[in-house]
Image 1 (cartoon, rainbow, N blue to C red):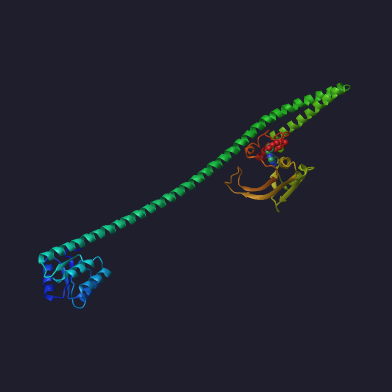
Image 2: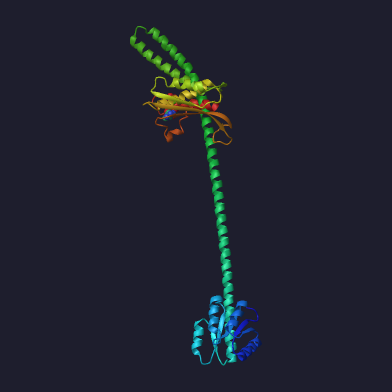
Length: 389
Ligand SMILES: Nc1ncnc2c1ncn2[C@@H]1O[C@H](COP(=O)(O)OP(=O)(O)OP(=O)(O)O)[C@@H](O)[C@H]1O
Ligand SMILES: [Mg+2]
């Protein structure tokens, strides 16, 4: 509300209208007048007023109609009704329709001033309240917006952290895998050096033992029992020699002597040799245009042989060994301790019992076996050869 509150005065009695206008203006109000309801509504359409002072009984359109109009179009406007002195009834009706107060004719000037002042105070408070409410709502909206922004930022940050965390975990797992591989390779290498020494000395000793057993057999010719015992000792020595031989293959192996060869025939021959006489079928799939490989054919033959033999031994009831050879390109950063480049990948699969999880980390260890007749050198040898390649 401005410094000079605006009042619309609707009164059909001209004398009263002019007097009231003068009185209200002298109190500092801006007063617009209308001679009846129709004129009053016209004024209301043109501008908003802080207060409407309206006579109730007027020819044409009365004050009640003006109040109806205000209720529909501008319900906030405060109305003070002016009633004829005999009509308490119309005063009550006006109050029921929402008038703030009423003034009875003839007007008591002091009362009029005080009612108008109170009505305008109500208008002022009403407007202040509305402003506060609007401000409150704006602040609430700002707060809500800030809250939503914050939530979104928290969500984004959480997602970024989760992402970074997953990447870190993956890197750590990758590093762990590499370290495990390295450790295994070192372990096998040192066991290899030890085994080579022992096998070499053993071989010499066995040669001596075997020589003396043969001599003793010649001397004991007539004693069949002694000859039988010596023959058994001889056979045991031969088995021991075969074992040291196997140990030497694993241990010394040596640097592979590589040639560029096609591995197709090697695979076919190796599989049919390993499976000869067994009730296990070999099923080999080789892609067309398999790349030639740069390998020590003898050593790779041994690798394949050991793996196929294991597969066969895992299927005592018979079955099939599936072998697949294909070309692959390893990009940098793959989880293998291999330089990037072109490789031939060989997959061997059997339909046997499989390798239990708890055994899996040991299968490349020298002398690890779950078989009563096994020496546990098959996969250790294969591993040593592959690593040296
Ligand atoms: N195809 C397979 N199916 C199930 N278990 C296997 C398979 N290949 C290897 N294993 C497991 O890995 C162990 C080690 O294999 P490895 O070839 O080194 O030794 P071995 O076969 O026991 O003895 P060797 O090969 O010296 O005669 C086996 O004893 C077996 O438990
Ligand atoms: Mg084996």
